[in-house]
Image (cartoon, rainbow, N blue to C red; front, side, top):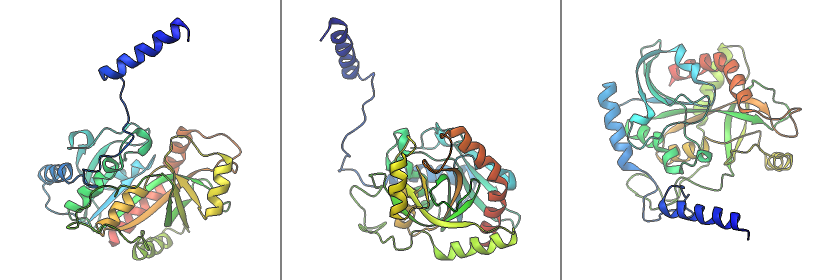
Amino acid sequence: MGALAQLVEQLTLNQFVAGSIPSRPTKRNLNLYNIDFTNALLAANLIKKQFAIDTIDSAVILGSGLGTFTQTVTVVATIAYNTLPGFPTTSVSGHKGNLTLARLDNNKLILIFEGRFHYYEGYSPQIITLPIVVCYMLGVKNLIVSNAAGGINKQFAIGDLMIINDHINLTGDNPLIGKNDLNYGKRFIDLSEPYATSLRDIALQCSLKLNFKPQQGVYLAVSGPSYETKAEIRAFATLGADAVGMSTVYEVIVANYFNINVLGISCITNLATGIATSSHDHQQVVNVANESSKLFSQWVNLIVNKL
């Protein structure tokens, strides 16, 4: 090893020892519970105080580029994520990082999570799903999760909206790993119906009023942040996936843990690798989601009014 290489290696080692280079844990602390109840309770109490609410029935999580939904409702109050205990700052374009209390036309109040946290940002599944635990502590019974996804099904087109009827978790992780408190949920939860049939039926009924037919299919989640290879997409298609993305499944798993009804909606913002004729770009994803946001917003507004 040359002198320069040795110097760089020693410098890096010294920085690591000093703590200036962050290290990512290679093993989960199994003495910790799988759910962060402490921060969730603190955040829920702060939300109740600032929003002047005790409970709320429905919540929506907005994915990349779908944040214009808040323009179709009456905003009552907003809290920045990084002011809530345990909530980090969002770092991905298309995610505003706000929690908003909004009022619908029928005077119903809903919670809107403007953006989410991702595994590829370095956040643990427990941090990613903290908003779901807060929802549970606020009494949420119905949750709509949305995302931007790549289309694997060759019948899909860019800009399509897809009702998620099932998912495949290929992230290599699960938010329920760790000690489990049976007072809140089962050790082994059933995922026979992770996306509530009753909510999917309502979504289909509402789409008729807007004269459009949403796609329906299986969402496959990967960790990201790299887009998939052609070989991976061929494999995912063989597994039965219709769309692929880098989010959502952890939130859905924890929502099912708490018996919260879930509706999942994907915006097909690009065709998957090997199907697309061009390379992928996140800004393009955000742009397509923005273009589909008007229809998405009208649709979700109708759905939430019926919950």
